Length: 89
Image (cartoon, rainbow, N blue to C red; front, side):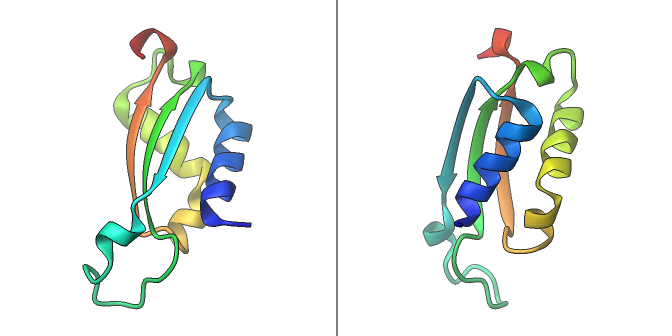
């Protein structure tokens, strides 16, 4: 399974989003890191979820980071996030 699909599956299970857009930006970052990054490493996420209602920006990021802790510790080097409650979308 691809890293992108794993991210989508985990976020769907954890946050039941009404809208999710995940863009693989890895090619834009080729050569920017001195280590050995290959494959799916950089993503941009836009996610709308009722779970974010009443939560601060930091709390929302923590929720996503918790759901993706294995991916963020492993293959994912960067995840740019835009996290919204339904009334903010």
